[in-house]
Image (cartoon, rainbow, N blue to C red; front, side):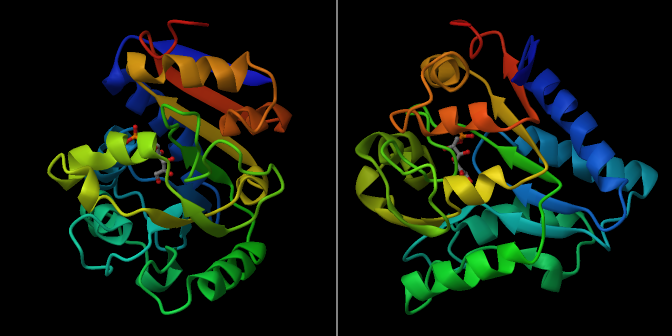
Length: 241
Ligand code: F6R
């Protein structure tokens, strides 16, 4: 069962997401699961604004990011490490040791997946933030990914690389072909999940997640089996519901 919130626009999606986040971070030692991409940027801006205005402390927060591109050094301007520091972490006071992002340029990505999954086992994520790809992916779990998958190396689909080319000067050749991603089973372990989606290019994926059959053709449909998922949409992303 999904709790579905349909709003007018991106800013309202961010506000609704922030209400969920604020509740999570008022808990002692919150564990947050975080995403990159366009969808959560508004939420992250509100978290920073709130910290500046009200002094909300993140000293005891622990974070786990969903994924990282393979092959980009962490100081690359399009690595998710850079994205998270520029869009969120530099504006909060989370101790660097509490921040977890898979290492995309380590020597042995398979070993890195095992290490990351092992770290994840040591915490339960209180609130997992998700975006959704236009092909229904969550994290980089592309169509066909088994529902019982844990952290693994994923090959990006042509569609995802096309969608993400906007961050690489519109040059698909520059978009990495592989990433390390938390698996669908790893994501499902979170206590609660929010999915943020805006824009008409997400309407089919949102429909598949909520109303479609629970099938690996739409990885996000795995969320049908979770008891605490809030989907926060603008009108365009909700158009098919
Ligand atoms: C990012 C991630 C992806 C994105 C998805 C939507 O860490 O895991 O699943 O959430 O590709 O991306 P945006 O929000 O840019 O449309």
